[in-house]
Image (tube, rainbow, N blue to C red):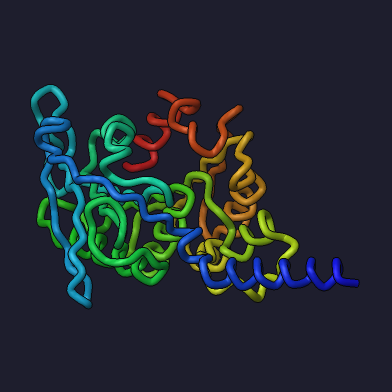
Amino acid sequence: MAIVWGLAGVYLLLAVVLWALQERITFPAPRSPLPDPAQTIGYGERIELQMQDGTRLVGWYLPPENAGGRRPSAPFAALLWFYGNGETIGAIWPVIRDFRPPHAALLVVDYPGYGASGGRATEAGMNEAADLAYAALAARAEVDRHRIYVYGRSLGSAAATHTADKHEVAGVILESPLTSARGMARQHYRIFPSFLVRLDLDNIDRIRRIQCPLLVFHGTADMLVPMRMGRDVAAAAGGPVEFVMLEGAGHNDTYDMGGTAYRNKIAAFVK
């Protein structure tokens, strides 16, 4: 009987820890300096945004790449980029450089508590940062606000669907999207009841209300966010959808495994 009570006590303790720390588990908030894009990749500018509570967010704005010495005539399309939960601009700038659509502008912001941004990492903070990033991009005279696309990878898929649900976007690109916070809890913490989950991150609910074109990438060997979640998100879409399997890709090697075909698919989608 003592063993049973001991195991029950350990279970309750773990449940309390998971309930209390779920935001920290979901948002590990790595820190890194923000590189100067003009020095790092040869073009672009650092931007600053301010949240309602005064928290300062930083990011990159990149105009379309020079193609043959000429840029597309303004106004041009633009892409909002939302990265995964363990990433920062300082860590993934080579990916942004190599996989961004060359004919479109791009804006990416470090979430609150991430990279070189201030504040604390929360779901509400990530959503507010997404709203601010959209507003900053739409306010640029050279950007066609009717051709703003959003891209979200892993956790960033929730920021992307939040943006598309709240604002006018021309299309949504999701890579390795989760279904929801509760869906992830059932996948990785199934011995604990789902009512302990306080986070939302509900891509399924939001994608039903989004009518614009949707492009979904998912690795067939993803063990963190299984491919069935990407399929479920695609199946719930309210508008036209294309689902692309990245054969052999796990959760963190999608860019390497997708390669040129992946890059060209994004460029073709962002018209």
